[in-house]
Image 1 (cartoon, protein in one colour):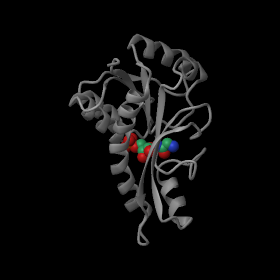
Image 2 (cartoon, protein in one colour):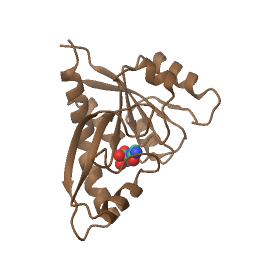
Image 3 (tube, helix red, strand yellow):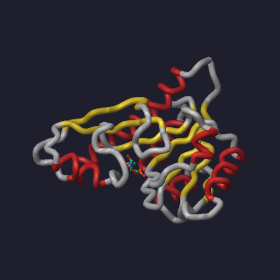
Image 4 (cartoon, helix red, strand yellow):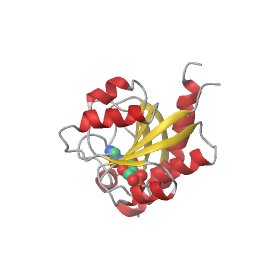
Length: 197
Ligand code: GAR
């Protein structure tokens, strides 16, 4: 039985924290082979940061725009002995310094069935607006490996859901986020099972 992942969740400046909350709860209940040992946010005071603190997970604030962002991020991850990075609402490209140090150990969740509706500018409600405008009858979410390009790494898993004719971006977003909160823990389990003993 291989060791549990030591997870850092990297959030964004909007930092609503649905995926973060789900991952921490799953880890704390022993439902995934992982411990969430760190949350990194570019901003203090977000809902994600407040939730992490209330669930006793250490939080480090690192603004994306700092000149030493890549080095600070790397140092923080090493300090906390992190073995798996999970992006959740993280809205910039991860520095190559970090990507190179964590091969196949950085995951992202995206609110659509990639490779459709991905790429720069495709985040949050923009994705659901585009899905509805394209007349899709199916959407969902994708957990994928992170590369130096937006939304391009190989998928770990995808969960589909229907798009109903009367859906609005908000109603579709709600259906997808509920799916995301199940998909991310399942992807971590799968990654753990698939890795070499
Ligand atoms: C999630 O819907 C996630 O899929 C999306 O940001 C949201 C974060 O919400 N990510 C992207 O669009 C990445 N391109 P949360 O903070 O409530 O988990």
